[in-house]
Image (cartoon, rainbow, N blue to C red):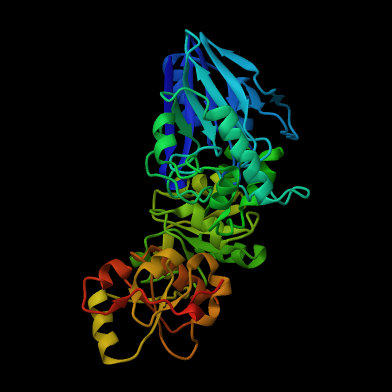
Length: 470
């Protein structure tokens, strides 16, 4: 018996590979199929099933491509209604993989089709569960994503989730291993651990949701403090329910190398947004005007989803040389298929062609401290609410990047805006967005709050309610 977690940190997503006697199963695969094909090929195993725990909202699954390339049967749990051929398993149904058995446990709550797969070893002993978004390490799945379907509410879904956990999962032996679909950093929960697996017994002791004394308390706790989900979530759900384009075709289109003249023409004729994926401190020194900077070396896909609400929006790329394939792949994972190509030769080729470039002023934390003490500055903190509330620069406005469109009042077009986040990644995203919208008096603080705290700038935990806007 082989059970392997294939974890993708940038999405905080766990897919799984199970193998026994030459047969294999893939659970919740990402869109690119090569890693799974290579893993099965390494052992000479045939992929028999592709199991989906639910219709994912935060990424586009690779179930269709994987099934087409291997002949594997796609499996969903009860209530799933995909528009493609799949086996809709019944609650309690058993699937055989070599000498192993996978038992289907219908666990609605996160969504109504949510299903947990219980793996029984060669002796029929419960070994582990693949819990999808039903049970995380330290948390449970948020119950608000599927509430728009019919008249169901998030409280209704939380009630279903409570019953699923208490009747299907918590009754299993304490030594059963929990393998969830996500870890810390995913927007599918609010309190996930950085650990990516644990025993069920330990989760019963430490997971706040599993310790709730009553169903009413559980519903209150899991629905409290939920932030609005990223705008691309429902679009990814719709893609996962339908027949999606092969990722191979998406990559072929997205990896077209364009000269500066071609790049400029496509931007104009297609109304394409220019997405620059270089590092923040490289981007600031010169970029195609009206570009948005979201660095590939960060939480790239989630921030693309938050900043570009429509997955169908035409995109053009400016990248570090050699990262084009990675960028197109990571965009495709979250459904951004409409990439028209990338700038061949990068910003150097753009400059050599005599085309205009723009820049963003960026200063060190020490320089910020000097200016802070010499003058009253308009400081704008684009971190999350909790980060700002815990500690921030005295007198700073708050404008969470996730809700920047609702927070534009925090920025001035008359006086300089000193923008910072925790380390510099999010602040450059914010600065590039604002620059594209006509805010030109921007000063980004390199190193962010982490660097500012090392200076003598006063910080406080006092929160002015007027700065917390969404």
